[in-house]
Length: 88
Image (cartoon, rainbow, N blue to C red; front, side, top):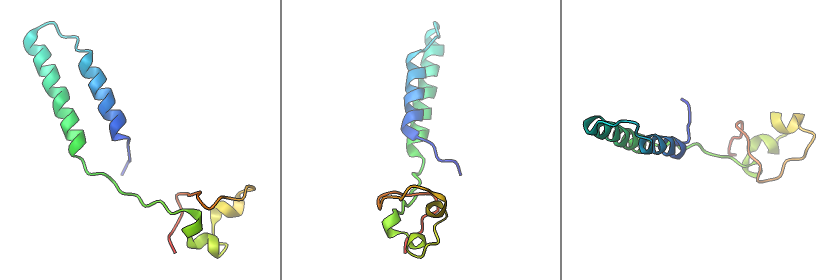
């Protein structure tokens, strides 16, 4: 799965819609219809809910089993999070 910014995609679709290059009325109307359809398709897609685990709640940090913390020269704040975090 690849997560994207759906709002940014909708913004790009909208900008493309506003730059309708078609002179013919029917083609211009089809262009607008297609863009509206794409906007609706993006809006109807499910939103991925990825859980963010902060360092203060991660079991790996508590038991010195955190690979990020181990190799980092900087002490991580309690509000920091990484992709390997697992809630205790």
